[in-house]
Image (cartoon, rainbow over all chains, first blue to last red; front, side, top):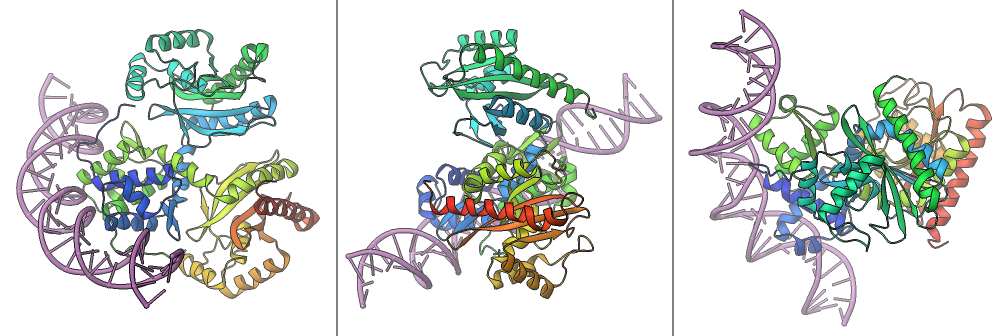
Length: 256
Length: 256
DNA sequence: CCACACGTTCGACAATGCCAAACTCTTAGA
DNA sequence: TCTAAGAGTTTGGCATTGTCGAACGTGTGG
């Protein structure tokens, strides 16, 4: 996603969005806390918060402000309009049930791989991340699956914008290496995250398309000790592929 | 929730929120569509949309604008900070599994009953609503369960703001009747929605508290032909109550 | 009881959002 | 092919409206 700059931006909106962002990053904040992070006077921040609260985008409990649930309402609607979610949820549930692991539907947003849905199977690890969270795209199975189906220049744009930051010893940090990897992902139709984002965590991803547009990816994650050998390299990839086909058929014949 | 008006509102934020609202209600819209619903010139609306897009709150596909996934990111965080969600998700899953019906965690927001989480059991009906959706509070099991634990004047405030609109023949539309109903809900600890919002749909709700603060409610819904007789009036209520207790214990002893 | 820290309100100035109108781009029809 | 209509985009100047700082509340701890 090219970081398009609006020609005539509405500053108040930029600033309001920044404040919401901060409330998220700080896990809720008081007025003074925000003051430290924003170039605005106390009085002004107050007006912003009061207005956002009135709009339902912020809630306050005494002195601390939080993101309001209207954000969830909006986000929920946004998700419902994502085809990957509508078409893929059932398949994700099925796969989580069958494998016992953590299954997620991810789509590209802001050059990142973003959770649209997640379903934990019986044995799934505690989740480190969840609905709406935006993960780096170069070191996740879902992200690489997505990149593998994006036009080359889009990939370059994204890498330009996001860089290839190190997360673990296995993280791909070299652009050429990344493109090689994407090539082999295209060959197999499967992407592997072999402890590239978090030590001890492996993942498997498959891109999902409708006609020729990329919808996102379905991915499975689990601890190294369970995702290894044949299960990691063969069985689970096969199951993912099966689900992918199912979803893509559903996409093609909406009524069936 | 009293409709607090900000003293010095930032108009641009109010308008931006209105536009997001419209994008939701219209299921995506073009610039001209918005023009009909907002007292702003084309050019101005354009600036708003461009800015919101830049902030990730709006996405565009050619000519049509949609809510952007950053809303989901924010909303997801907001949800994670709701204790009812964190504490209750497991219980809701369990209940959905066991009963096969639709189970939801709801909390009060804007004087409405709002979905924090939903889990569909095997036999659950197709959902008419979902994450983040805000339902009327006087004609849903969850809503009435919530009202039953709110201070009397809060209930009056909410009813003043929301009214008691008719949804079906069974909808409670009289304030006195509502208060009687709430009284009996308090007695039983259970609320019933007997086709009060949608014909053919029944629901059962239980309020959930932590210490003395109300967190929200857990509710179960299904078609009349499955929710009837003893199952509706006894068995399912008992199961809900069991889960409620489990959640409240978890709330009390965080580490257990 | 005072002092401090934080939130809230207010009035005046100037930044900035708004409108209208001109411009571009695409599509459809003659 | 040319024209017109319909949509989106950009611009400049005026007036609205956000912004600051200071003064005013409010509550908490010493």
